[in-house]
Length: 104
Image (cartoon, rainbow, N blue to C red; front, side, top):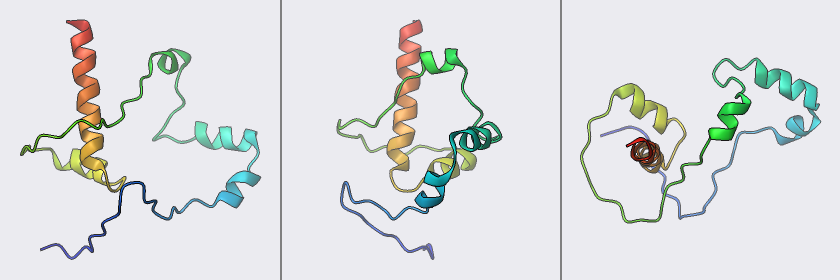
């Protein structure tokens, strides 16, 4: 059994964030843009990428229970953002299916 403590939250219940909002509000636009441009994990998007981007939100449709084997790297990536990782995985897969259907 995992040593991690499992915390359950009601839908819509917010977790306390770690963002230092006061420091963020003091940051000038120029410094914020420079910091964003220097972020190698999240490079700025081109205008073409922005035009073609689509949001992939989890739906309210009932989910179907299924067992799936995922690479540890993939699972760790989605779990790192906290609760709702299964819905995020589903949203990415749904987006993939829709893009494939559009090209068929």
